[in-house]
Image 1 (cartoon, rainbow, N blue to C red):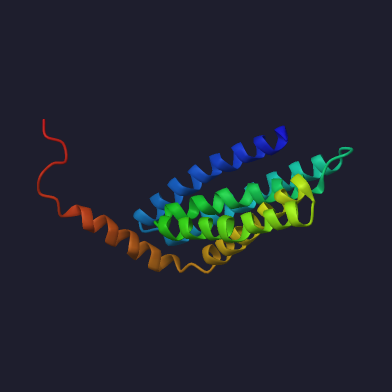
Image 2: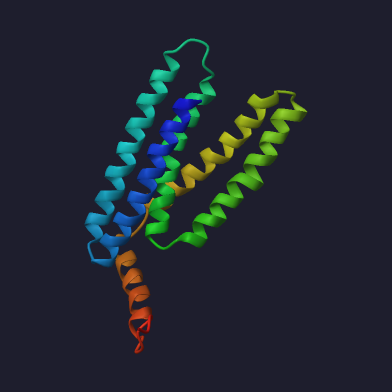
Length: 170
């Protein structure tokens, strides 16, 4: 499980980097750079998590759910960072809540308690929610029209540009 924590820490770092990079590129009116950054950071995080999953699977007595968790927890935070960088926080929150509370928790309860799979069943159910969230975020991210996102970002910037008084008075 320590490996899972390491991979998750790396992907959370990529989450912050993706959020800032995408936000800056959209604000600078560089849609191709934003799209390229998303692709690079997602692929890089995927490669790191797959390598960690292969190393874990090569060990003895390791649950395959851990390898799946490593891969999913390597991609999902990065895509969440992209959604925040694009200004889709509300959408990301709804996807997160729906996937975990409507899919993951009921599946985990079903597998863990009804089918008597215990902790593996609960873990499997939560991985089902994570799989669903990852698929939704991949689909939305790679269907994004980055030129429209640049215009949306400019609209958000212009909203705050009308201020006549300084935010902080001396």
